[in-house]
Length: 421
Ligand code: AMP
Picture: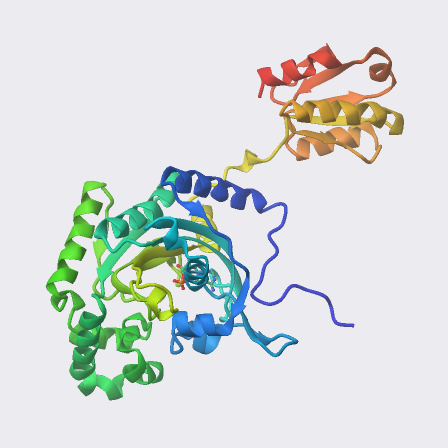
């Protein structure tokens, strides 16, 4: 019989690893709340057409990486490979603009892409991100970048770098891609096969090619988009930079940062983990003023980013940012038999209602085994409950910090725990 296992490129997040996720999620909540962004949750699958139209048919995501299937009604559905198009779909469907001219949204959830799994690249992975819909101002770009940056700072990460660029508005981009095709025509035959294919459909992607030959050609021959921005695009970009300077957010201007997706306009940015390997992009985003219109919505500008959770965990592990003792519990109750459980369970219940974390050993095993387990689970206090404790309604509370023992009536337990919390 076939062994039942998780699908290649997916991972169980086990109870032993969950504290890392929860630590990050807590910081995310804190930073999103500080910036006054509101959470949005959309379904994990959508009509395939949403991504084909929203992300672009020639993008790697749509052309190669989507999990697409027909449901029993014959409708083509896709497990979401990104969240900007679903959020835009929701914004349009629910007429968000009728409540307020600007919406500041955040999300966190699993995404699915059929990529070649490797360190930092899964087939099911998780992203958090934000979308600010309704503002064309450079201040919105700067706020979104500041938010992305604040999360890494708040988490204590040190090895990361912010890269920013502008790819201009639609006309600038069209003029620039024409210029790029003309300039690089002479080098076309020296490019790798993938770049040769991209030359006509999405020449900006040539900047992303990891092939050293292609990278050299781009370095030596490609004109910088920043020399070809329209006046309005250049002013927009200058303002974004001024605001980042004013907020003391360090960045590097990187004219080769064009991002893979078709919908970007003007500002693009990426945060790279400087201690990560080949998959070093922690976060990517930018402005996408045409997406909502392309999805038959209002002509509304927007800016956002998406950031990977798994890569963030790798980066934080590399910097030793997960403390060992984050788990544990206030009290480990060790009842000696089932009669002791009759006493331990209501006692635990009342302490939990008072705000303490209490673990009750349910196995009725030896005191030695229970206390060994309490140690392993990093309990801050332990108490054994046996016949005497039941009879006298008193117990011996042992502190695992300093091994001190105090004999206390049950009613005094909550106060005793608070002293060493
Ligand atoms: P993208 O949506 O491709 O711009 O990716 C945004 C971020 O999501 C990246 O910077 C990564 O941190 C993360 N990411 C993208 N694809 C994957 C993947 N296959 N596995 C893990 N993380 C990913």
